[in-house]
Length: 473
Image (cartoon, rainbow, N blue to C red; front, side, top):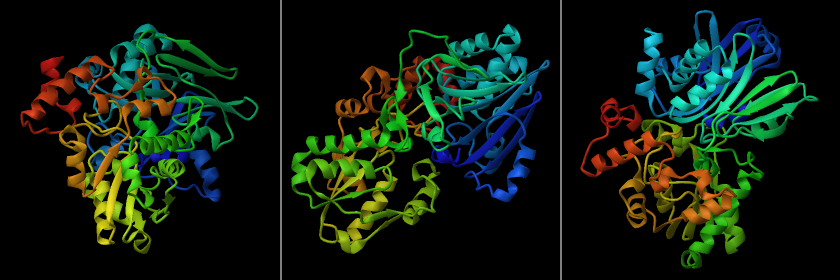
């Protein structure tokens, strides 16, 4: 889980299974270092031969400390002698519908995060059918959104499943002579423990685990794949692999594409500067394709571990200032190409460009690997309103003026897709095209886009506004 702490740093939790009992540890912030002299203590606290864990990045629910700890995963649910636990990555769109349904069976149900919805819905269906596979299939049919789930039942059944669109990643692998079996959001979680990656869990698939290994069952057909494109540009670690390509290789190709698409801009640049670390690989690609020097004059403070994108806005500016150091003598009087993974709100880039201007940089050309974001995400990336997205109402020229750049050059959608190795119909590109893979998300996005253009003040994440859901359900 420490290898995947980049996927969420607000809270972390571990749950193990031993003799029909669950043992749980949850806390806020990053996963702590476990000292060698404390290992036996941890084995005592978390006994058993199977376990699940989670690092959380909040895309639903409140974000004060009390709410965060209450929403920390893994989560459990129990009734009538049935009990199960899950760890979940993704985001649910039809939350209000599910809350209403769950409260009929669990009158005291207290919603803290979307994992609670998945867990209780799954338990309800499990009690009805007495069959885990049928319960998972019913969840796939009734829950709209992105969900990659791993779980354990009271009987010790270890399982994993994905939504019918395979929006968020989840892979499976084995280690130690095929005696240990594991799931991981990213392949790096397996690699770092010497595990061999066996496969990516497919859309609408459940995987059951026993001493004999993995048993795979396809439960839902025909939905099609819609893997999150933002994983390639920003979220995933560069040393993770999707299908047969490492993420860093894809990002290098993003950089080469940007050079091919913006030859006139390249001709009037002196050096390349990356916004580390997600801009580093694309900077290499820009360097290889253009021949310009990649000046390693921007450095990331390795002990400021927060990712600015997933912080609250009030924390973001201070973190950016502490996190990125730029060496002024190396950039003074230079015309600079900055490689950036994405521009969501524009906050990070604006702070960096302001620094560069103070340092005497002549020109700033921003090369952005992810196409212009014009719409909110409903599937697990916390950019959930039109108002917060600088690209939702501004052209690249207008964005350049707002953030202080001379040019903002976005990679084309066509070349972005080509570099990933996926086909366009296999990716979720909703935030850059406005075309959502699930029906309720499309209806909410269309309704709120119309209101936004009419001056409506969004009061929170679009999928958490009940009045909108009631109107269009």
